Image 1 (cartoon, rainbow, N blue to C red):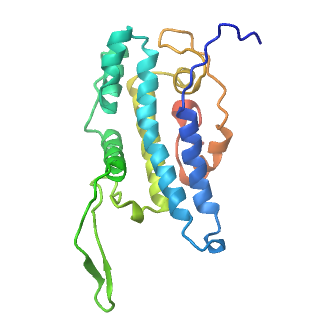
Image 2 (image 1 turned 90 degrees about the vertical axis):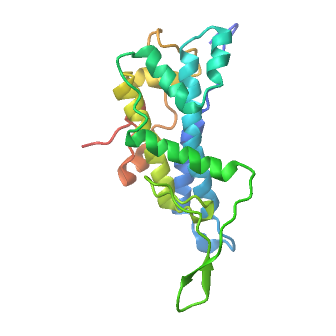
Image 3 (image 1 turned 45 degrees about the vertical axis):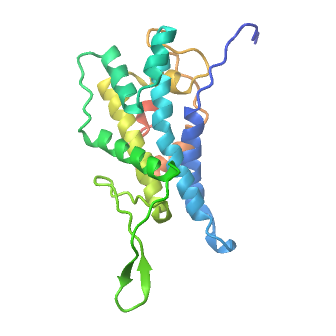
Length: 235
């Protein structure tokens, strides 16, 4: 293949998806008894954070596909991630409203708040409370989110929270890209995963998805539906 003057478009959506899924697999398959320290929690936290990063990454890929004038693109690129999704929808499908109150959007907003609580370099504090009346056991409670009941304290994240984060992100993309935007899977794969230039107005090719077979377990064991990129539940 002659690569002279060819441009490679680096999109990290597939890397984040792959990392999120396989870190979750490792969290379930690692023999914790073989280690002196807790090795499951780092896998869980990393899987969750990679799932949440799929939101901002995907929003940026979608804005890039609009092929906006340079200065306008720079202005739009500064928007919060959810506003980018709304701008994209309003651009390609003016007849569809972006419903910020629906459960899929509320779920990813909670995940964003979880991510912010974790990564912002501010010390949080809470008062110790006795959690066992008959024993001298104390703990602190930083609360949970309203909809997902996701613990704000990353020390309390378990493997089921990794599944919840991955499912919530995929449920949002299924609703947003397939139902609201009306895009097909080939178009979504081009925009999110392809290394070639991808725009809304170009012919959809459907790039090869390296990790698509690796999603089988997540589909079968946890019912996570990746149909926005062509990997869906079998009914």
